[in-house]
Length: 192
Image 1 (cartoon, helix red, strand yellow):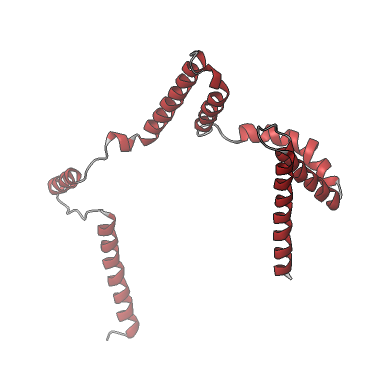
Image 2 (cartoon, rainbow, N blue to C red):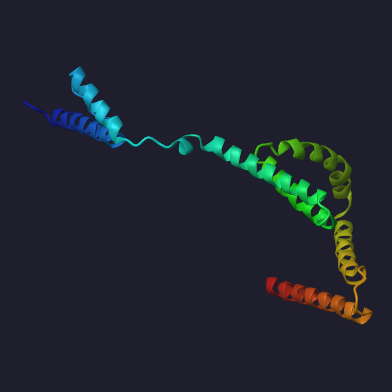
């Protein structure tokens, strides 16, 4: 006599074996027969049907490195020729800035950031961060506002521009402060 437990046990065994064959088929593992010649023929057919990836896709990282190196060399060549030629020599600051910015961006695709960040952190923390945050909170706020005011006033009155009068610069500064304080009041009231 067959008990209920035996029927459940057989059902579990059948499910696991059918699930196993299904998962092998889903993974692309063929179920080969015991004949060695038939297995060899089936494997050969499977290999012929699969498309091999191209050389570019197999060596993607090498191709990427070569492209970036060629681009950096092209930018460096452009910068050297633009700096040497008399016709474009007067723009050497802008050319230098852009050329070396792009070369640096390309270089840092391969150089770890810690090469720069660790020395900067070693200088910044003891000389700037610790003394600044040792100041009281309201002194830091005051220094921030002074820096902001210096930037606004420096941009309004610090540059000699043609056909720009003092009153026009003063109007720019006053409008900037009115706009800033207007937003401060609106946001302050919306929080409450």
